Image (cartoon, rainbow over all chains, first blue to last red; front, side, top):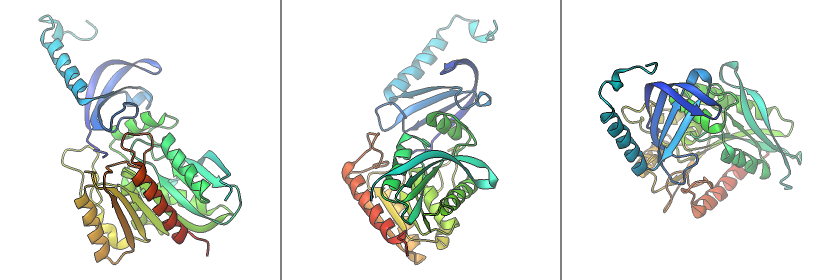
Length: 92
Length: 248
């Protein structure tokens, strides 16, 4: 099935796509058909910058278990980051 | 039928007079031919959809697939274009109808055209094939597992499409529907709702739901491919178009 299900959110950071690094301004997260992964459905994440064209995209297609593990690892990493560093900006 | 063809990328006039990219495949035998507008699935104007377009030309039809994501992502790869279109909320219904109208008009300009045109769409394109057939004068339409025809997209989906079942009385042509019993979007209940609406409106339709098949059973490059369902579906498409797009 095509789920159509999509979460969109603003982002601040950078990603490396097919044409090198770019500023990431948005992300979409959806559970739907993958393009490349060998599964009927995957958890897909696109880190994008629409102002730089459709090619400014870092794409991921993860099986649900991998996606959960990644999400937990991100939260765990942030939770254990040295106190004070989380409040600094990217320029710091 | 020689199966010889010419296939190429062209620019056609779509909704609002916009120039949009399209993939055109035409038989070379010069025989009078019906036209088929192929409406790509949500993953976009990709290799699989172009292969389907060529398949219609191999069977003697003038076939064209408009790139519905041309505006969001000109020149982008199909997967990047699909991601960009998704991020922006999908293809508006009004624009889809205009793009299909442009594709159909383009096919009718060919000397070999017999004037008849059908639509066929897969996945989101299945819904759009029905939408086009309820909005334009066509000779036949095929809906391959299109969801959200009788029901709106669930609450909270940024890709929001309202139900279009109310358009059923406007359906301008016979409809062939091909579905998988194991599909959830559209579910068998949703397919039954569409059947009921077509019956009540007195429309000509022919629906087939395949056991052991879910969504996207025609997609040969995906794990969802079900050869038995796909082969039977293709046979029904050839018979349907053979009747409805025949040269008078």
